[in-house]
Image 1 (spheres, helix red, strand yellow):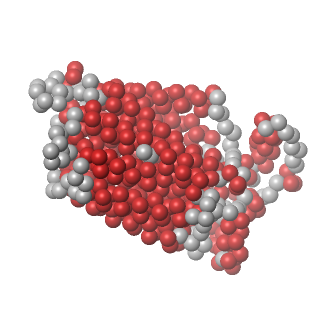
Image 2 (image 1 turned 45 degrees about the vertical axis):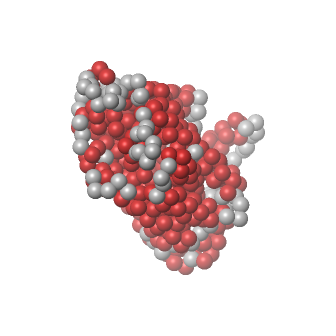
Image 3 (image 1 turned 180 degrees about the horizontal axis):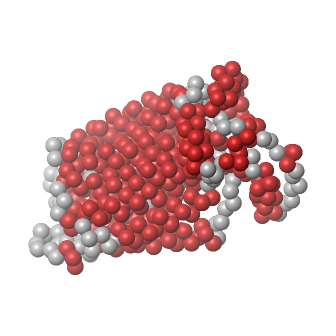
Length: 470
C-alpha cells in the first residue's frame, strides 16, 4: 500500500514543492533507504531476539511517521519522515514472513505465497484512494495559477488516509491477532519451557491437548535438523562432510545461552548467521537469491515509479492527452491486474512447474510485456501491456516472497530474508534517482533497463540449485 501511495502522489508532490525531474525520484529513494535499514535491522533482530516484538513495532513506527509525513512543510522534511516510515515497512516483511512460515506445517507453506495477495490488495486500495482524492484536490490541469497551500493537498490527504489504515492494522494485530513467539525460534534458542507453553496453547486453540516434557524436545543444535524439509535433509546428505565442519565453526553453542540478551552476543550471532549464509552449503543459493531480489527491484521499481508520470504526459497520434482522472483510472486497472498474480502463483508453485518454473515464466514474461509496452502506439495496448507487467511482476514477487524463507534453515531464515529484502531496497534507493535522470535523456530508457533486469532475474532463477516443492 505504501509503495503504491508514494508512486501515485509523486507528481503532485513535485508540483507542490517545485522539484526538478531529476530529483523527484529522491522521494521514493528515501522510502527505500528506510526500508533497507529496516530490513537488515529487523531481520537480524528477529533471528537473535525473536519475531514477536517486530510483529507490532514495525507497524507502530510506520503509523507514526506516516502521520508526520502528511504534515511535512518542505520536500526535505517529507523525505526525512518517509525514511523512518520505510524503516517500519522494510522490517515488517522479513519478520512477518519468518513468523508466518514457522507456524505453518510443511504441506501448507504455499500459503505464504498466497499471503502476498495482500500486497496487491494494498496497491489496489491506494489506487482507489488516489482516484477518489487526487483529481479534485490537486492543482488545476490547465496550467493556471495554483495556491499549493490550499489547492494541492490531495497528497497530504492520501498519506493521512494510509496512516489511519495502518493504525487500524496495528490495533487488529495488538488486540485480535496476537501471536506468541514461534516454537521453532524458541527451540533454536534452547528455551524449552517457553516452547512447551506455546505448543500447548496452540493445541488448546485448535481444540486439542498435548503433554510434552523437556526431554522430548530437541536441543538447539538438533532443532535445526528437526525442522528441515525433506529437501533440506537431501541437501545435507549431499554436503554432509563440508557442512558439518562449517556448522561447528559458525553456529553458537548452547553454553552461551545465558548471555543471549547481551548486545555483544547479538552482534556475534548476526555475524555468524551471515557467515553461514556464505558457507559452501548456502553460498550459491544466497548469491542467486540476492541477485534475484536486487534485479527484480531495479526492473519493477523503474517501471512502477516511472508509470504515473509517464501516463500523465502520454499522448498517442490522434488521441488527446489524458486527464488526471483518466490517468488514475488506468493506474487503478494496472493495480487490479496484479491481484490474480498472487492467487495463481500459490496454485502454480504446487504444480509440475514448482517454485523455479513459476518464477522463470513470470520473469521472462515481464520482460516481454515491458518490451511490448515500449513499442505501443495506442492507449488500449498501453493498458493491456502495463496490466500484463503488473500481473506477471506480482506473480514473480509472490513466489520470491515465499521461496526465500522456505529455502533457508530456521537459524538463518530471518537474516536471509532480511538481507535479501535489504539488497532489494538498496536497488530501490538507486532506481528512482536513476529513472529521473534517464527521463531527462529519453523516456524509453527506464523501460529498456527494466527489460534487461527481468531477463537477468529469469536466468538467475534457472541457476538456483534447489526446488522446494515437495
